[in-house]
Image (cartoon, rainbow, N blue to C red; front, side, top):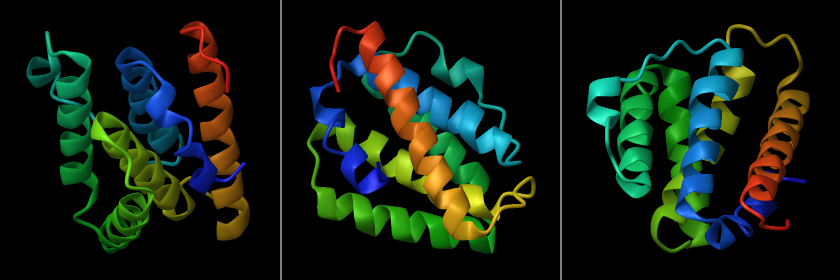
Length: 140
């Protein structure tokens, strides 16, 4: 499963599932790759799912795009997400999943070749999305 197919499932998920997937991408997958990020929890407090996702993605992008790797990953992820043309919040979740996927191979804790790490990151994202979808009674 490639990330280019992952975007096909995002619009069919409830906002709460999209929020959970976004949190996993940013707080677990990127952290496992070696990107240190501590969200400003005060800014995230009491936000609806759509606003929460936008705020978390914004905080993460601001914290990670300052490097050459981050700048390149944000550019590639943005261009690819634009081609998917998803509606609403699904577009932001698509973007962040791509951004994190492209950051992972450059992560300081990565020792696999980049192509293998990209494939692994895509697989991890799809498996996580399937688990979250199941919790919300959505079949992928």
